[in-house]
Amino acid sequence: MVLIAPSILSADFACLGKEVASVSKAGADMIHIDVMDGHFVPNLTFGPCVIRDIRKYTDLPFDVHLMMTNPGEFIGSFAEAGADMITVHLESGENVSDLISKIKKVGCRVGLSIRPKTNINAIIPYLPDIDLILVMAVEPGFGGQRFQKQAIARIAEIKDLIGRKEVQIAVDGGVNDVTAPACIVAGADILVAGSYIFGKRSYAKAIQILKEGVR
Image (cartoon, rainbow, N blue to C red; front, side, top):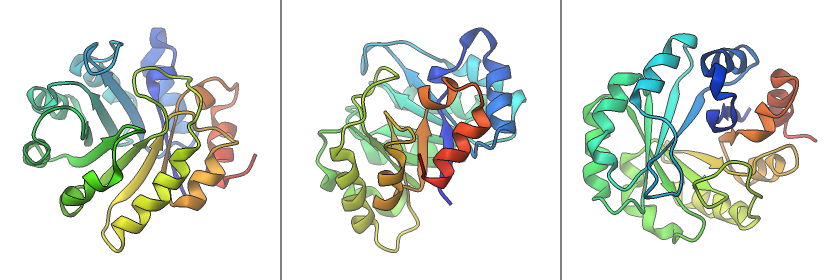
């Protein structure tokens, strides 16, 4: 069954710890944390101190998604704060191999994210060294955007590229009860969902609908 990673970008920031605890009890498999620096994307979100503070509210893995122009400078800080996986962007401008090495050195799993217009073949050299590919189905920077349908074909193509390698595929952006089934069929292992889950009265029901891949 597909794994569900609620994105706390859509949570109530006034009670973030409780929100994390709530989705954990509701059946989430991991917590997705979008870190934005105001440069790589036009928005600002969480720093290591926030992650450190919410870490005590759940035992679920934290996937810290660094949407930053200089992620290498912060990998150690986010690992110390409680990240289990650190996902960096292929388009960050830094040497990707160096970033992968830094993430492994601090004991975290490695994720590599690509924007909607990035050539899929650009990930090929890194497949032997990463644990996850995060396919953006929207342009990163803001929650609540409409799902870009071409992401389905991109997921399927990446699935073929991965072959027998033990690399998971996650999809992020516009994931809901309508778009999730096609993502699952195409080969997604993890669904990152923010506004769909946190916008529902019952987090448990929303998560279960996504897991089952039905509307």
